[in-house]
Length: 464
Image 1 (cartoon, rainbow, N blue to C red):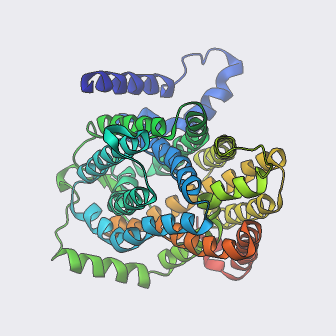
Image 2 (cartoon, rainbow, N blue to C red):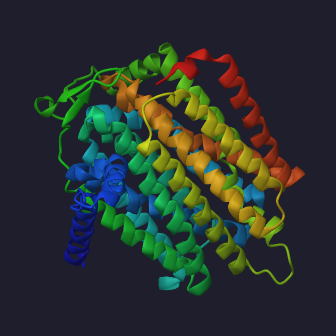
């Protein structure tokens, strides 16, 4: 089985390499512009190391997108409660908030490849165990607390892994390709955002929730087979502002701290004292806290607002949610491609504008009662979310000093835990005022906040 999966991973990697190679048809004048656009947009895939990382990331992110659908569907199916959805999100958030800074220290001190592999193997086991419980194998029966414990453990493991997973990009590609690599990586993730939820919704309706977990376990295992082939040491090191040089002689990072706790404190001091880093993180945290909880509350929103007819079943609501999140993925691909092919100018302004687009889209989403009207709205939400994430990741890496980058990224990726905290609070609020007012009201505040930021924070507008 393992050898078969390994052969499959090598076949996928070869296919990606062929698709990323220059198109050998330059003699045809009509294709010159297409060739230059493809090379500009997907150029980073020509690097074999980045290609392996990219393939591993999309397998992992695809599994995560499927999990959002199946776990949310199961929680609401078992409890029928928005508060339960919020509690599940909180279970994932608490270890994330506590361990994300530790993950940054690990990313700066330990081999990033090893960290990523260990987390991916845990996710294989986690998905397989949930599949067994969901299928009722060996006399087991899935209960809410099983999902709660799984979310808690996975939140901790992924928080330790995320800083390494993102900061390793700048170890593998040079500064001339960093923005393109991050954009391409984001486009791959959003491709999975397009496909993953739809696959999960279909599997829930056609087979069972257990089948979703089995597919997730297989995808996580494929991610391991790609990651294991990455180089053990960094190839590039960056100086603040984008300079880079070879890093082969520096081992895994070239620095030795006085201790993990000291490194952690130093990293937090760096984030707090650097005005640009502090501003980027503050704007990003604002966006995720007030806007992103809608993703976790979508199972309940679909069931109560868009699928409220008496003949609409739980399985149908699962399919509807999967379709909506897949349509959102179309917009996310557009946003990621825009970032990947764009010039390195005005990126601070673009981050604010993408955030405003996200807020406007969620406001429209919250007031819609019709499934078919909601679908095109999801395209704008996906574009705003993908665009602000990709631009933000470029800015935070370019403006971070190399020795602190892992710890800065750990603070940056605390956003995922903050989404869960926001979901818990919005879930409680939705239990009292309804999901539409809870989600739409906060999204409206985001639009206002982005307008104020654009007009009153010149440092943000000046970022390139």
